[in-house]
Length: 371
Image (cartoon, rainbow, N blue to C red; front, side, top):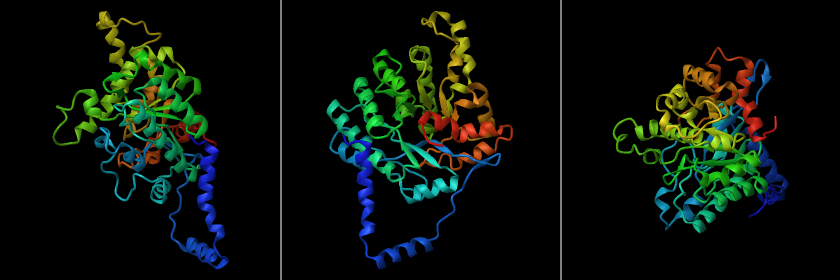
């Protein structure tokens, strides 16, 4: 696996060719670039101070990964689906940068939704190597605008831990993106402890995003029909189940310093957190493990994207989890949240320090992004 320096050298070499142009050709190119209509980048200020905004929830689909999966059982699961008009889901290029500029997003944290958890070891290893190296090289073209989360073969926890470590140490990635379960297995199982231990050791940012959620949650027969309920209900439900197991199976007690971030505002769990606390009082016989604190209190050691779509949802999420646990998310290239920055300003009761934290300072610390 190539290291980060080699990636940057490759990228620099690809662009160096412009210096080999004749002077006249260079002048024409410069003139063309200057006269092209370029939309102004939206800069975000809070209390008169410029804030670096960081979107922790964005995706990319890599054709190189689909090529590796071709002719294997994974082929039918390779990423696809509708995205917002005018976007290229395979690119970190001009159209994405323009959208980020319009939204006022300075940095996107890019990840790939898992579709490879059924792969056997050799295929999984090959697929992950291709994805991580390609995504790292794409981010290296605009290192001030993009950082990446590694893909990992979570079905092989020791291998996943090694893949994450290699990606962070050699490719400049900031953590890993994972699904909420692995082929029916809960990742709160002790089987996955080697991965969680390595994540805690590296202080890796772990972003949990659902995959095939209607099937993973067992509700696929109930969410057919109008409304896209397999996604609208399925994705938050998968996040809710994932977090509940991480709490009740003592995973967060075993690894209290995890930098775990849950997609979609934590699903439904923060909206009904009191039922977790009451459950072990009402049905005490079904709570066989002794947690170190009340179930609801663990929500204050988990991070969340702020994709709850309205000020009241944001107010409640903060009241349950704390403003220090939130970061903005867009779900780009999918059209779920088209203006994550404005959502923060729509809540008049937020203080300037609250806004700064949600817009960027919390993510800066978690992902080690320069101010």
